[in-house]
Length: 550
Image (cartoon, rainbow, N blue to C red):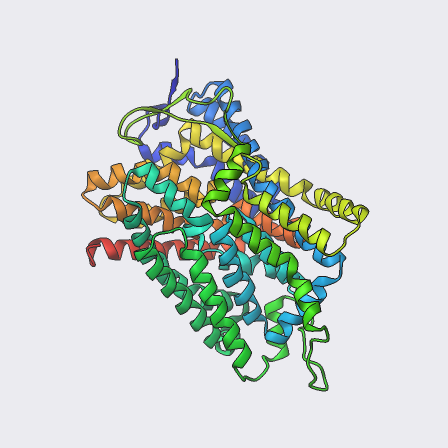
């Protein structure tokens, strides 16, 4: 007989039940924010607390609990760690061959000021990778590139986490919204338009907000024009494409237009160099990259050398785009295996009011070795090694050093995903959702916070949409609100939760080589900005609901 989820603990009200359900999250917050422990310690602690809550508070059978833990751990290894591994290998290939020095110099000639470099790589280029691949790839690639450009690991990670917000809802060729449409049964184009209406205003302010947070008022004044242009071009394109074309190409087109606008601005704009103290502060380094004393061009490499140096990332773009083409996806799907996870698949029943009618909770592990985003990174890395004539021994050395670098981050990712999946299957996450849904007229605000919590737990807007999509629709219909807008608020709130997801923080840390001690500092910095941005998204949803009658 299947085990039925119960959302009230010990027969208590939803408030007490939600407080108990939140204990694993509180454990992680205390370990990182108060005790300042490394992320892997916080992840293991959260997993231990979630096991206690699942077994003794929700009375989940032991076999199901450990089935959920192993399912989450496996998902952490593939596809997440698979993506991170090959993204770092690609970056290391450019460093061992000396090509990243040329890349750094070419970017330096286009623009020497750090904020513009951050906007170009962490916001625009990262958004392109998010739109095509998603699932951790953009943070890993962009953070590694910024570190190579002279940003400190901490600053590079923080910049990329702040920047990787606006494009998340439309990431991976619209996968989060495709999942939301499938989960809720709502029209895809209406969902896309609603998410665009919420996310576009956020995209307008993110470039300036990122520069202000990392550099202060003086830096923002110096870099205001590129921030405004980037925000308006990206946000405007995101709104138009998301509203009228759907979610699949929204990020890709918005990021391309933003990169072109930045390139034109940097190429033809004549401005005074940013003061060196502001440069150094923004990069987080003791010395900023200064122009040559004689005023000569910084770049000494030939055009051919620059093209060769950028080829690894050209390969990445080509393979990422190829992997998004439907016929190629179909061809690569022959290597996909949908495995019913043992001791878990369809053995847990989700109950009303989380879903309209009782239904089994599926547990499919999709082993798509060929079509996974990480495999596109692998192909780019292998082609880059061949193109740059990297010897086999050097390539194997890169693989080995990357494995050693990822040992601790993998522990964190696996433990956090195990915790998240256990909370999902035990019913703890649904309890939190029901607590939010009892907020009445202000539910649109908490609807966004629900998505925020979902992405904090799972590290994925897609997973948060699958988790809470049905609950949003059921609650909206009970309260007489728009199911489309509430579902969109869930997805939009999730985009600003990604910067505090431990999986994402660990991806950035692994890509930059950031110390374990700095991970808790990074989490504390991101937390306050994530909360503020989540509140802004919630207020936008509230405004649309009660004043603009969306």
